[in-house]
Image (cartoon, rainbow, N blue to C red):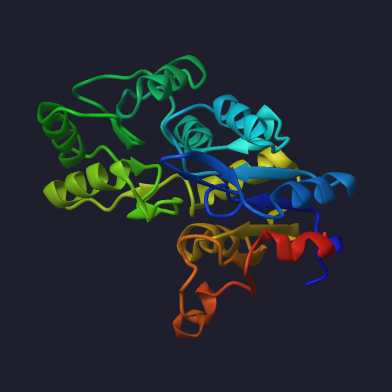
Amino acid sequence: MNLDRAGGFVLDLDGTLVQRGASGMHVLPGAAQALAAIRASGRPLAIFTNASHVAPPVIAAELREAGLEIADDEVLTPICSTMSYIAARHPGRPVTTFATSATRERLENEGGIELVDENADVVFVAHPDAFAFDALEHAARAISSGAPLLTASYVAAYSGADGPIYSRGAMVTAALAKATGARPTVTGKPSKAAVAEVVARIGVPSRELVVIGDDVVLDIGLGHLGDSHTILVRSGISATAELERLPASRRPHEAVSGIADLVDRL
């Protein structure tokens, strides 16, 4: 695809633009230049990260401190798409959530969601700092009584500078799914809810977007759900993925070694 014909861009964060590890956040080669090239073209962009422990302005501030010029409203997380999903599908329903205190406050204050410890109509798993087994049991009982099980993400791990960053949310979701037999509904990447959130934020039809990321399941999967053009960067979790062994419907349209390889095409 000729990328100068794209209407907008959706970029992943970890493994695509930055790597995070014990020594902090490091901007990957070409990341700043790629963002600058997109901005110079006048086209919109969104950074969609599956990090659900803090709000977008906090993530944007961290990126600016690291050297990437990102506006607060250019960052999307699964909490954004989850709030929209609950508002559309389960308005006014009490929700039990496994999440950080910052995320809980955001769900209540920004999303207008009633959070309860028992007798929930919806169960949502984000990124919890900790949880009690009593809370897990209450959630399981709610799910067994008909409450849908929503999860920000159901992949095992994300790309980190020091190796895989294992998903606490996926661990909690798996426990609830095992106990109840429920099939989790993903509201972050990859999901139709995430596609809808991107389109609403960017204002460009998904088929006119280019989705760039390091994860075949999350990022390329998100792009395929929206019929977008997909580009896998080999700088993260799917660095060694054998793409030829994947079904054609799951392969990226392109694969490059890193975001730097795209700068001259933007």
